[in-house]
Length: 314
Image (tube, rainbow, N blue to C red; front, side):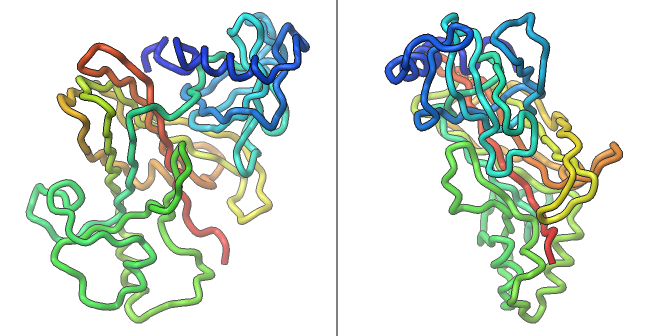
């Protein structure tokens, strides 16, 4: 992404620092405004690997690298406003920086998803459509969740698509997609084995990216990447984390000329589930980051992520 389009720019940083100052209790360690954890803000890393340091200084050695799409919980901002203290805000905080607090540059993170709304929908299978057409973009037909598709033993309609995305997840930074139901699912209707085999046979998914601006959009410079979480051996709970690797799937600038639109990006299944390293993929997250230019010349940076999981537990 182009520099200077992210969290530390303009009003976003001003609002963030002012919010901490209002609840601050004076100057703390390193000349910082101390903020209570109860008022901490959750932000997202928008660089591949954001350097985190022990003290708020560019000369301080790096102690950790926060990978793309990781959520951090901020604690305080130094008086210069060029470093923010943060820690891991994930539900399972085993990726760096784990439980420790380090200092990160504001331009490595995004404070809020942005005013332009983003939808990410991972289509893992499509019904029969005309050659060259997409069931999701041109003739939506019936929408199935993965669970609905496997559980419905009735005849399928002529045009349909199956999405792994959880529509009920209201997280501001994005939800999750499950490629198959849990292996422990109790209901196994007739024909479910064949439909599971159909889903497993897919080699390429389609990620539907929808944008809707509060005002007309001229163009977007967008990047879609995958962050693969690698472990020694995948398991439900007890696993040894190795590292997170990041790969760009697409980066481009495209014209919009309206309030928004929807486009499809092909995502190879192996890009989500396989790695060339010695580890194995526990799960992946698709991360979308874009610089939006509106017709009136104003700009904003937006971001959203989608966790992609598959059954590990029996």
